[in-house]
Amino acid sequence: MRAFTEKRLLVATHNAGKLDEMRALFAPYGVEVIGAAEAGLAEPAETEDSFVGNARIKARAAVAATGLPVLADDSGISVDALDGAPGVHTADWAETGSGRDFRMAMERTWAAIQATGKPAPYGAQFRCTLVLMWPDGHDEVFEGILPGQVVWPPRGTEGHGYDPIFMPDGHDITLGEMSAELKNSLSHRAIAVEKMIEAILA
Image 1 (cartoon, one colour):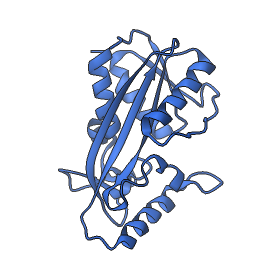
Image 2: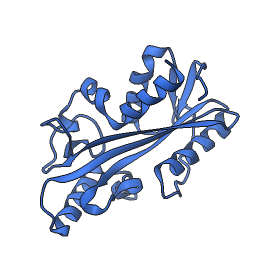
Image 3: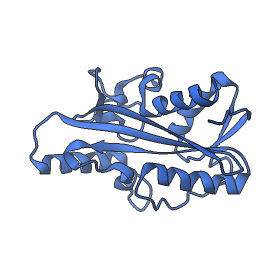
Image 4: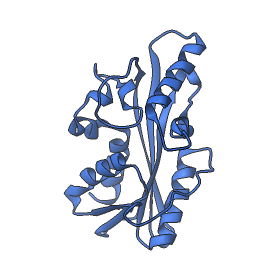
């Protein structure tokens, strides 16, 4: 396991919500986090069928473009009743041709669940795979899984993506109803980042 000693880190995302989470999680370690948009990076095509494969695509592209160490993630929601879908296609389910519409994606997910005829509760997991890549191509991989269930209708205006329809195990509110502090303490991304911090920063 390679220790991370750099003071700047490029997070390969254009998602403002994810970037805010990463900044908050890395702030205590004195690491300056910059985003892909700030670096003028385009989003590479995600052509793999696994979270780790897509994260590596994003990491390699950003390292090649900037020469900085890069943290890339691929994450999504996997619904048991849908045999793990949308999974790596989580963001694709929100595509409209003119941007992403997660309200539409949540409605599509709920309709797909109902079409199965399966009874509630609808078990699901938010999954996050992080790839931390150095300019020499070395990488370390960390995974975080947050178990819970899909609920309807959407609840809360906090968070982003599918947060309003996901209620984590052990809680009676959705991620969309949680404060940023609470969500950041238990999210799938926080779990993966905690593993990474313990391995390479602590």
